[in-house]
Image (tube, rainbow, N blue to C red; front, side, top):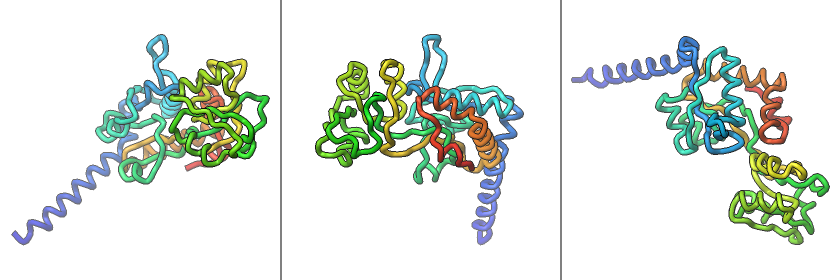
Length: 265
């Protein structure tokens, strides 16, 4: 019986090693299969949504297709919701997650992340004729926000007392207010600027300043070093040749931030 614990420990160590090796072969498995399964959003435009032809479209969809193309394999898009996207990865229903996934310390305990591929900023947008480059410039102006959002809280703290913060019940109400000319400035996520540009092309929103910087990264299972290196290789090349910037500009109506465009991993 005195050998039971050492034997068990060795067995568990070998099991852990074999699992790690299996995960390290994820890239080889994808290349052998000729297909990569990528979890993407389906109800979060402009990152991912279903068009009139029932096809997935959006920024994350284009990035998924770009990565598959550069890897020389076919892409199988796996629609997910925010709540289950990491679970799909951990249960091996997907090889990658490209679904507005932000990196934080808690998530890094369970999955790995690529370098950033797109901004997910909270910003102030408005018509071109209104000159605003920071919180102080909001003095005497009216800015629309969705009630209770991060933008609402931040602008309440940073805008001058003479600024008027007009609160709407949701993003759709705020968008309608901008389109109808009730407000010329809005505090919102960059992705909402896409909807504004679509609905108000004559007053296409211009980025005034960023309230808070954030970003999206590709998610992978732990221990898949070769696959992570390959994804980062594709993203680095796509930043350098402008392909990634074109995708971000197409869907968000803002360029890839200069720092992100020149940060590689």
